[in-house]
Length: 329
Image (cartoon, rainbow, N blue to C red; front, top):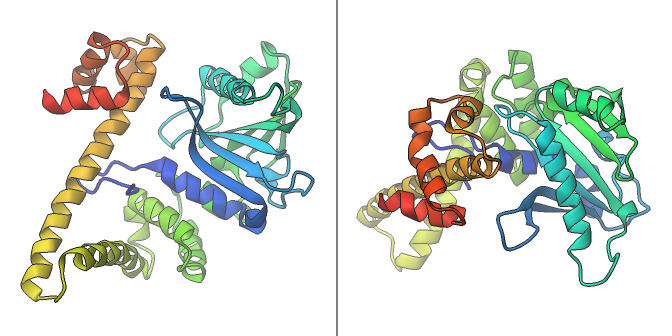
């Protein structure tokens, strides 16, 4: 999926975070398997990222992964979202479900699991809850890294805004609030050294789109951004041309370009609507009201109402089914 919707400017953060965390753990890439949106069941319940160590006894070098065990569950919140108390219980429940959803009893020992919760902002209410209600100890062990002890499953909280610029440049910069030209320059310089790496491409494009005004002040930004966009476009164009053309002509190329633009526009529109339906669907599942949902999404109730009504009027429908109803309405 594209990292943004060019029409509306909506930023899709999760694909970039999936690439960004792989960048951070690049030194151990040969020992880690990454699965995006690991499905827990046929129902819409899924872990954001599951990281599995191939060699259990081999320690991870990077600071954010040093506490990893065999199977590591990661929950990520985009910059405009927050890490709540309920998010903790949801992810903890996912960990328990993941452990239990196996063919054999205790096939996944509890000792193999860890939980990592990631957000840009400091989750004050959650940390207070973990200390006062759960009785856990929460210690700031390193810039942006909070160790949570007192549970059988090791837990850590990563506050990306506080992460070390030197150690965690890419995850720290995965924001729409990049603050200085110096930060933008550091990213561009590091990207230039890794420009052939598709992970770096995915993250830099998202960060640039989210902080466009800042990057416009950095020399070379426009060329780099156009290079990324052109590379994607050329790849798609070549695929279409290989299918449809035996002999290339200028007229046919232009026709295919126009068709592709329309197809991509429709795909991105569907992705944006599906993402919005998913967000509202999850909040409705928690019995949140229309007003609360609108406030949490920082929009007006009228913007949420059509999707909200479809979900309420069609209990048990999946996100895809709700989308179909929305598209037909």
